[in-house]
Image (cartoon, rainbow, N blue to C red):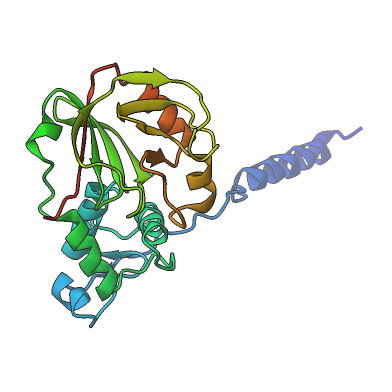
Length: 246
């Protein structure tokens, strides 16, 4: 037991130690700084093959590419920064059209994306009421309602021997599951619009991508999207199949 001045010295040491503990730096996880955007080249330079848009570049050219991606069914944020989300959308587009998915925008690819995007406007029929708009150029189906896009998804079509018909049709039958009489393959969530041609999910399309074709139907690659289309498309809904860019 301490007493007198000894006890006072003891309390002084304890107080000093306590103060020192409070002054110790907090155990914090270091924050990784966001990469500083690098100015992107002008689109004219990209189209000419003189420059590329690379990760984390920023500028008006990037925003144009983001807008065009969204317009052809690969949604990208309109931030003007070639960030991870934008590159993921671009890689998906690259894979779809047979390019190596690098995420880097080159002249040839940017030119083709521009051609696919066109003027960015949908046909008038696609901006009125409820309609399924199917674009053979962009290879997408858009579920539209009163001019607003509710869903966009990748699709494929028939070959030159078994072409998917162009024109305006209407959904006349809905069948949740059946086997094709022609190919013997499943046709889940079928929406028939012209004879034996239907919009439906295709396990083969999901497996093989665009390395193949349908026998005239509009194949949907995503099962989730095919279910959504089936549930939200009443009988007699117009189906408009066309090729943009002409």
